[in-house]
Length: 119
Image 1 (cartoon, one colour):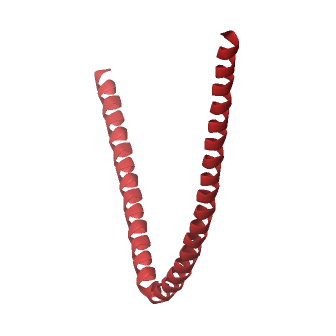
Image 2 (tube, helix red, strand yellow):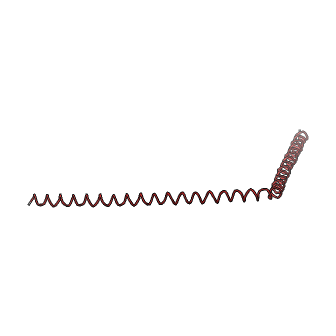
Image 3 (cartoon, one colour):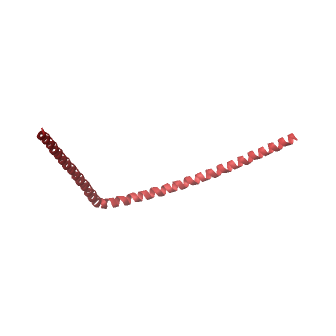
């Protein structure tokens, strides 16, 4: 019986060893494939950037010119809107101050009148 148990243990050990080797080989293959894919993608991106650089420079100049004109138009619009907003705010502040002064005057006159009436 001992020989049978030793044989079973040896077979289990051998099976576990084979499974471990297969797992390690599969993992290594996956890692190598991933690294190769990453390298290929990087090379393609670099080649695309280097080859497409001449085309991109012209496109970037056009885009920058369009962006600059759009920004200047936006700044002009904001400046005009700001002027309108400032005028509106000044008018509102003046109206509020006038209303507060008038209300204060009415309150003072009423208080004065009430005090005169009480006396």
